[in-house]
Length: 302
Length: 279
Image 1 (cartoon, chains in turn red, cyan):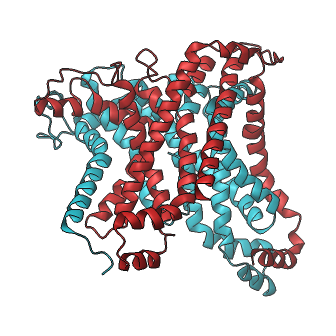
Image 2 (cartoon, rainbow over the protein chains, first blue to last red):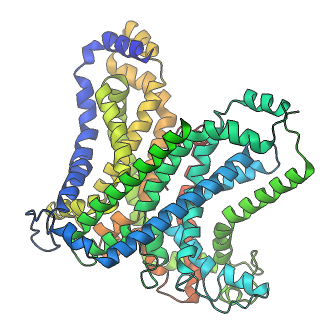
Image 3 (tube, one colour):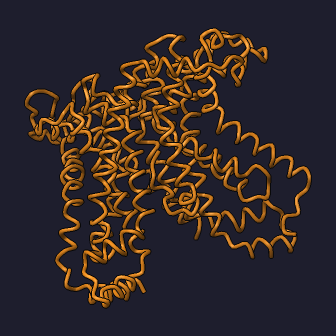
């Protein structure tokens, strides 16, 4: 039907057949010049020894960067942190998002309030998300410590974001908070596609709520789940705004995710080529993870 | 009739609901509460969410801060510029995309998806080098180009789906009645696209308003800093005394976004934009 409409449109408005390109060029040219080509150049930079400076040397050094990377323990350590950060945050976002989306389907009061509040983390600029949570985690006058102290927990002035054992979990909580809105919205849309008749039929056959979820809701949510988990995985793996403002990767590299590591390599130390090489490795890792996740998912359905 | 719930289940559901309400809202509420507290109350032993002696001093201090005012002006300039230019460029292109060129439509969508996979570092270094060559580093104009290009693909995609929702029969009918191309676009297509244009412009505005890392890399002079840059610099560098004004400024900086999201709430729920607007 779309095709029919399109061809009809082309016939009747045929006299303007040259204009679409004219319409499109002002949008296509900047995107190609300032993002498609730069991205290609960025990938290429990963195969050069480019350094920041007056003149940037763009001659290739092929796989030198990657050979060096192999023995860069700090980078692999940050990779480990990055994977834990990504998997945990993605998991928490999904569980919280699904829980909330399912609650929103129930007949309860105050749902309007939750619906609006659910968008707050999404609507808050990332830098401000970090500022909000720093106010919560403040050692002396933060909400968390004040509440714990008032409840009689001898917390002292524990600095959540600077303590070796608490910094990483504290950052993960913020990550889950910040990303659960998108997940909830996507899953709410997905739940709309679950046929209510099947639920009714199963309920009249005496199926429990859990059985109905397991055998009706869950399979129907599968495509949305795959999409949002993949997207969240990519976003979390590549995001470092929160970590940058919350901890700058500290204490002692405990929250140094690879995206921040590469950023520092590029703009703190000026090793453009080496930093781009790290970016390339990150792309490969993300693609590998997605491949495994989506393939396993498909086999599970069959 | 379908929802036969036991009392225990209902209690559990409300408990979960309460948990979500608290979890989702307390960071924002705490920031808001901090912004209305005087220095004495900030260090009170027992915290209270509702300030005992609310004061607007922090807002006064924030607005008296030259850095904050200047970076708010910079952010406004950039965001407005980005919103206007993005719509001006994306609008005709979206029309062309929706009505004519099918290959490019698929390419646009693929680009939006593919570009998500690449870490920022791969795009930000080349952009830095290009802007340096063009002598646009450390200038709002350079950053504006980046923002424009960054919000164009998604805006384009959004607008073309609005164009596609306009039945082509309308345009044909007008054309048969003798209306020229320009007239059809102005009198029929444009008014019907108004809601889409508003959403697209808001999207571009908010993307620029919230953005942090491009600004961090492109801008060096403190007098060009955007609001997120200035706020990020404020935190950590100062003591407890500054937290009140920081909270006040942060809340003001969040307002445009909150307004935007309340405007597009319904679109989000219908799933039209789900997954597209990145936080």
